[in-house]
Image 1: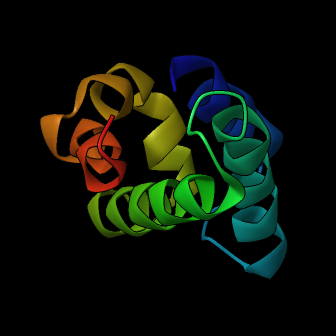
Image 2: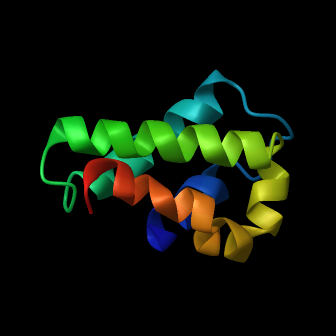
Length: 87
């Protein structure tokens, strides 16, 4: 998860608010990573939907998310997304 979030946030760091392209890049990066450990594409989708929702709620501005990447990675609420798929 750490690598996925960091890569995703680096791609979108130059923007101020989440737009369609930013969301898509973040989501696709999450999916690429999660498909390797989530057990199925459906589980990866459930996980990434959860992560996306929680990150955007906590950091409505992706620049803030990047500036607080340690907080994002270690946030228990965001980490709980793995529990939504039994991991």
